[in-house]
Length: 564
Image (cartoon, rainbow, N blue to C red; front, side, top):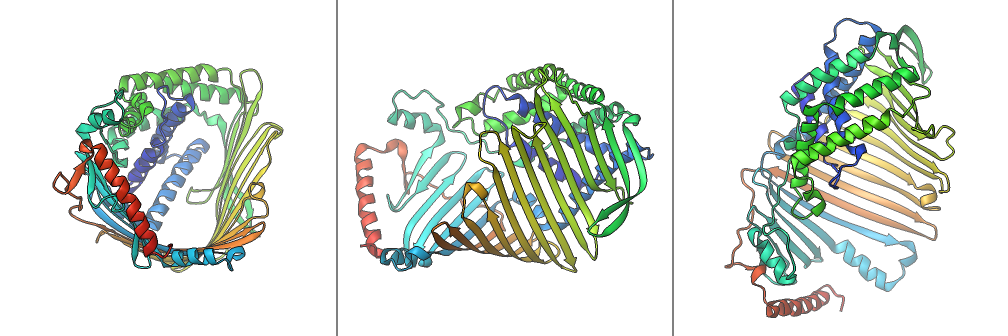
């Protein structure tokens, strides 16, 4: 496995862990999800090292090759962006974005009051600036609203390891700051009964902090790679070569591989899998450490997250959840077993996949039928059809029926490509109104890689019963230049949105121009009593003066921009 693949795997694992729950006793579904994620990411890579080609081995190798092929393709397509983001996790950076736009509604076009507002919007520009130092965990940001040359809003804020502060000239022309070790004193000033932490702590975590170490990955690979290989019997697999696979009036010669288990075999395999995780002390430690990291990053401001900062307690919670799931899963049955069929090409990469699994609960009630289908089919002259379909329904689709279908048709011509994306989300639940959401987007992209690329996109969104008689469509023009070696990333977007309402129409235009640059040192304000005001020292008279100054400044602003 290449270093790039390993880095991609780590990023995926870390990103998934960011959704850790915020209750002291983690819900079982999250425990199981995290455990399975760790295991599958680690174990999937082992099958690439099997050399003989029985149906079982070929099936497992093909799945590993498909994962590797996908990560390599992402690396080629988005390599410059990924390289820039990798550096941005280590180096200070500054960013500067300008946002402007326009807005109109047909029913208000002759309204004098709306014309004044529309004129203000067309002259307005929002400027957003930031300075970040990921290593020092310090940052600064500013937000300014300019209307026809007049600053209508100007906000600044910063955070260091010792202080947080903000400045709003509409309140006062100085920074107000809080020393983090004086947090308790300030809180008691406004609430004498306060009994929380005396010091405010911001333990910001980076994705890199959540990465699996090479040692941890090695342990997962060794243990669960062997588990999957040993527990999936050779008899579960069949192979058929030179199968006719028809797609878009073309016929491909592919190999069909099937993994099929009976209801009893499926139950045994999944029970053994859960039991293996339930007794895996090292896996539980890996998960607990990362849950604690995430909890500590917001424990000072979130009491629920503060309950998840004891690693031993979190680990015990994870173990208990896995053991509970192990007991519950023994009463679950799989009436149709498990079936996965894949079609692979001569490079042993999956072209078509179909997975089916039906589940019944402990009392025999229908818990659901799960289907997953994917396609990545090359055809014609440099064309590809990609598709992902996920379905969840009860046995007769009477109580619940959910389906997500994503299709993308890609045509490549040198450095230019076109894509036709279609997404459909359908949901039906007894007693509820059916949901049918459709989104389409046609794109023309100039530039084979993301270092220098432009794109023109046209989209339509139909919300169905959620917004009857409403149409949403628009265009997006995108221009980006990224150079990771020079530490620069520039993006421009020109977005036009058309809203068709039951009794009206509206148009929105939004222009965004952003520039980000890596640097040696972030510019973070240095604030003390000489150029700022400690909130700990604010008196009732200070607060009254701030309030009076605010009213005066607002009236002056309204006059400057022509509202009075």
